Amino acid sequence: LAAALALLLAPRSVAGFYYHPRMIAVVHLVTLGWISASILGTLYLIAPMTLGIRLPYRPVDRWALGTFVIGVTGMATHFWIDEPRGMVWSAGTVIFAFALVGWRVLSRLPGARLPSEIKLHVGLAFANLALAAGLGLLVGLDKFLPVLPGRSLANVHAHAHLAALGWVLMLVMGLGYRLLPMLLPAAPPTAGPVRAGAIALEVGVLGLSVSLFADSVVAIFFGLVVMAAIGLFLSSTAKMLRNRRPSSRRLIRPDFGLWQISFAFASFLSATALGALLLLAPDGEWKLRAAIAYGTLGLLGFFGQMIVGVAARLVPLHAYLGAPVGTECTREAPPPGALPSRGLQGTVFGLWAVSVPLLAFSLSLDLILWIRVCGSLLAGAAVASWLSVTTILRRARVPSDLASGEPAPEE
Image (tube, rainbow, N blue to C red; front, side, top):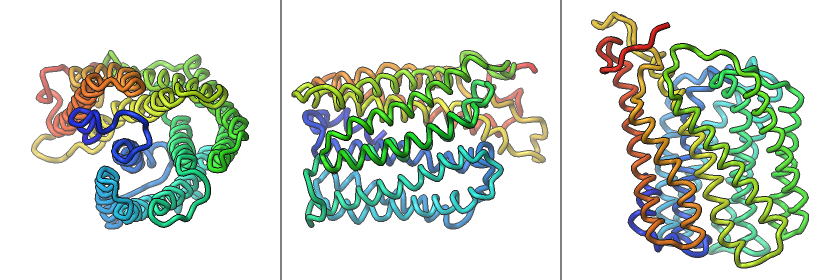
């Protein structure tokens, strides 16, 4: 919501060449405040279901949340006012929060009843997160205390790809191999391609980041390795789609969560194609415009919408499993499919579907009016998502025949 309001209220502040303080502030509101915060929070919900890891509440979780909120707020604020010293201090608190949650997950990962190839994805994702956080801290320090060689923009590109591909994409792929068979539903993928994809992505990400950092043409080779890893992930996804199993009759149609995930994959394919073009095509002014569309489709189009789509299924299930029992309302809670508001879910999907491609186009061409329009659409999507979640939680706490005007679906 904060990132969307920045687009709505100050569109000229984020337009133009993408490497300037206010655009970086908005990007970090999305990458840290939206994407990474959603990942960390979702781990508490899906780790028991998909990773076989119990994460019961501990006081350290409150510290992790508090330091993360303070750190992300401080980073975005200091980026906006172009104060790198404050940004570095704020980044330290974010890293501390990542370390707390990462320690809780990784300390339980070796003993989890989980295929080794999924453990590999999760472990590599957190290792890449540590590398990306360290490099980002050095990039910030370099603003007032030169500690890095080479061009600043090359260092930023290395940090961005290490974080987006090494941390977020690696974890999305690993969890996706567990979640997609549940959400579609479908037969799970075989171990060989999953393990090969993790290794290929790790080699590609590390090689791409180092070569971008060094301004080397070898980046083209490692970019192709990353695309090969993406190809393995997409082929496994396609195989799951071809081997779908009958879905539950409790699932109400239309399934906006699955629609959102499908739209996220369409954005992912577009971003991958643009990334290949940026790597292979000769330099030109057009690349600056294509780069901003590439980032928008990757960060908001794929990662952002995957979060929305998966949440459309996970939040109702979480609310149903956590519904109170043994109170004065002794009847069974409404089933997960009856909890969401179809109107709100459809609104969220529609606003995302329109705003993402329009924002990529508007930012690449500096269309100020349309950037403002996209900000309003994304702000509406954020508010509608919040209302959708609160509606689900509220309906889970009343008996099924009083939950809403919508009847509970039959078995």
